Figure (cartoon, rainbow, N blue to C red):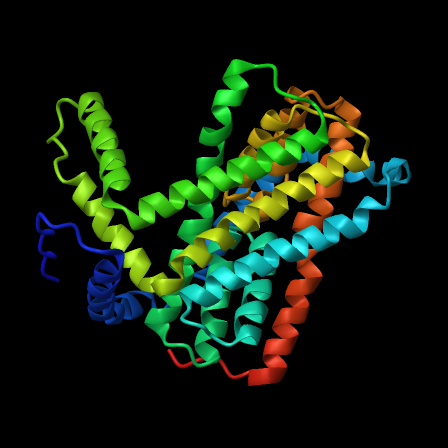
Length: 371
């Protein structure tokens, strides 16, 4: 594929960039489809055996923390059970934000196809070794079976996943100043306000990066300068800002004119999930430092991406319990709050995934999509 021409001195409008990127994306879509056509294959028996062995060893290493968290179900009577409906509603709102984002990225695919495939893929990712890839492959196959073009499915899912993960990686940067200054307020009401401000700033920063060349070019120059200083003996990196802007334009091509709604949905997905953790802490009667709780939340989401256990099982429980303790939560409350949060964020999606797969099968039958 030929290299895109450089922008002229006159800055292009976001509409012009989207149109240009759509044309580039259309030319690349067939290549993407050919390269990803076999994404649904789960691999050889040797590979499956390897992942099972890695998962078993990993679960053995984190077993004490996992058993401690799971064993806290006996203390559920100590919780304010009135928070349970709120946590369920918050998790459903987080899922709804993800469905909106994926539907935008998939060019307005049918709601049932987006919802059922996301629920089934998410559930598989939480129970299978190396589940992230298997969950994405299952959702891809379900979308293709629903009649969505392969290239469109791959590009849409990739864009949605990149945007949601970029949001959670950016969150610690937003709360770092509050942590460094100290004196962070302790009430959960103030914690909620801090979370809302952080997500609002995140959305504003995302809009600036997607809509304007200047902020993204500045980020590229800073990263490029740091990389060149750290690797003085390697060939210098010279065109990172231009590469970032090209990739940004491709992302905009996938999202189309509804990219602002997609960005807001990605932020909302994590805002409601964070609110679920705050509700779990409120249910145990704990009043931690909210900025550190947000950092603990971000650490839990990163740990959930570790592919060596399904859905980060064990690693999330150990990491979240420890970071909540650092945030000022008593050890027993941290364990119980972690169990309650994971009850809604990890275990609740499993039966929902089964329901999504069942509804999809009733809609399209058992026949697999053509390879």
